[in-house]
Length: 441
Image (cartoon, rainbow, N blue to C red; front, top):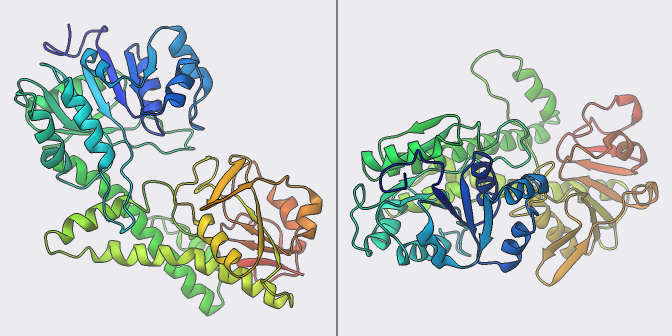
């Protein structure tokens, strides 16, 4: 039984366009469910790596790719004409912001054009890339309609947002509930039937736009609450209070409070980007997204706040920023991943380097870092000597594998933007109240 008559057959072919942080884990999961998958990517190196049984995604083991390859259930190609062989197609391409912080859906347009060039009767097409409400209906649908087929009859179009959380060992594609909405009820039904083969729970909604907005709401919720707690961190700093102590106290309330923690700023592809898609859409409708805008402004200030704490620590040590040796610990945007997209470490580096500091970094997940345009850095070994000789050590990303007690003990001056040293007994320091600048000798 192929896509024309249903999605229950084991011989249906699944095409995944874009083999990045979303697409490759999706392809591997589907292959693990017994579905034959063809992955499409414009980068030949990515396709060659997958065909050799390798994963370029830190959240996905080589073993999963190798097993899928050995079973003949996964292959990768740059040949978009092979989309014609697929019964279901998921578009999992990046949706970044332009230099003016407006949506850049160029990758979605290119992928949609490629699908349209080979669209045939009965195919299911699902956009998974996070975008503003209306994208699937107003942008993707008109492109696909050029093939002369009617949605809900000739082909089936849905939006089903990715919910990938890199570094999360518990919630993966298979056990994370998956939202889906179609152009028509028949489209939604077809999408649910297909994804149910390798996703435990499907959550159908009434429209494409409801699914699109649900995804934006998820990320806006986090961004706004992180913005709130970051502002509280700035307030606590002015009041001379320890924000992590305050948060832990508030979190003892068994109802009406959800714990969020401050940090050096937002990173990754989702939280710093996705809410801007909704803000842009609403500006076209003469509506201002006030919470989102304010949260984005506060979160964007945090790298400068951390850089300011480094300057403050150096000032107490009677050391000018110019010529100071600064070690950044962790440059990925979150713990236990290798993703540096939108990482606050980039701005922290730029601000300190602009003042003349000599900045290096250590990150076990990021051996090389294109930190600034025209400047690539290599991760340094985290030896006792480098910890002891560096003027300021800055914890930007609290990777689980880092020994924070050792880092605390060996550093002369330590700025902790993640409260990674918060559980270390106070007896180890004659420090400054254990907030931000946690050790000053």
